Image: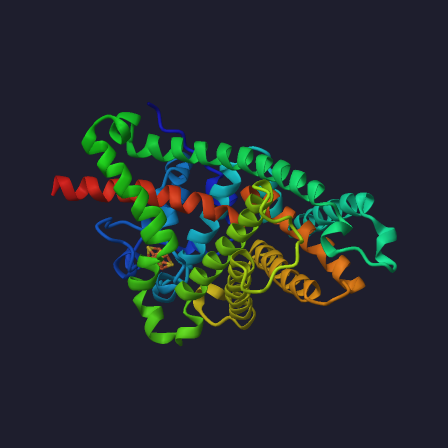
Amino acid sequence: MATVVDIDLMADVQKFGAADVNACFSCGNCTALCPLADNDATFPRRIIRYAQVGLTDELLGSKELWTCYHCGLCSESCPTEADPGEFMAAARRYAIASYEPTGLARVLYTKPVIGTIIAVVVALFFAGFMLSQAQLGGIDAPRLALFDFVSNDLIHWMGIVVMALMFLAGAWGVVRMVRAIGKRDGVTLKDTFGSGAAWTRTVRALWDSVGVESLGQKRFRDDCHDEQVVEPLWRRRWLVHALTIWGFLMLFAATLIDYGLELLGIKETGTPIPIWYPSRALGTVGGLALMYGVTVFMLGRWKRWSTSQATSQSSDWLLLTLLWLTGFTGFVIEVALYVTTPPVWGYWFFLVHVAIAMELLLMLPFTKFAHVMYRPVALFFYSLSQQKHATAA
Ligand code: SF4
Ligand code: SF4
């Protein structure tokens, strides 16, 4: 099959960041130093080369792109200051924009002002829609219970529609990514499910990708060792990243448990419960972990604590801001829930919280948040190829 060369690829990737990468002359220093290069003797230099020579399919089918945790070691040692770590981040943004079908991610990444306006409009849309259905009269005495201000049914149905849209857009992007990686690596369905041995490899790759790496952060924790020596524990990126992930998942689980209890007729959403009630305790711990992680990430980017935090894009701030606002407003609501008479400010924080949480989920496939879908998929294929190497050796 003929190889398609896109002479504009490098210029296009540079719209997503990585302004200095043209200075790269393929010396290989970054490959020698990258703690995650493994037995791939050309990572990350080869990915830069794909962009330089216009191999779009190779670039988009590179699972290795997602194994990089942007430690910045390669950038610190690059003799031409081509900033390969930032190039890898820019290439991931480019990949997210290329996998999703609407073009929205490209706008969010490459046009910060328009992207910010879109983010504000989406939040206002959700808030305005809920406000149009809210029981405003109930804010005056006698006060409504907080969860009666906007009806539970409305929030539940909005959540279901938002999740369905998110799932459709996300699945579309993931299928495109899987096809790109499968084509580049020559992985077929038979390789993955065609025999008992193939199933064993597949189950192992799933565990490596989701359990060991995405939740356990193993390589981030163990292999990005240079950073671990330099940074104090409280701001080590693997720990801050892990707390952010675990916190978000705990909050999501608490929301699902609450919904499940309502469906089973055990507890209606909004029923007064003590702080140690399982879903409330899970949500509180998760919220603390999320707030800690996101706040430290924001401080790191603001203060430029490390090479990887020296350059920030509007997309980095958009995701951090949405996550922080979701966590903060969630805690304000929790305080309002334990006040005997719901305070008026509680209603408005409730509205903002739900609007931003909906926006966060709806825009997941288009923002930096999309890496929660794409990285595990790439790590799955990475584990498969590592197992193949090990068998062949
Ligand atoms: S990015 Fe820098 S270190 Fe890496 S190959 Fe290019 S010039 Fe060498
Ligand atoms: S940023 Fe770190 S993990 Fe990523 S390519 Fe450079 S050295 Fe490797």
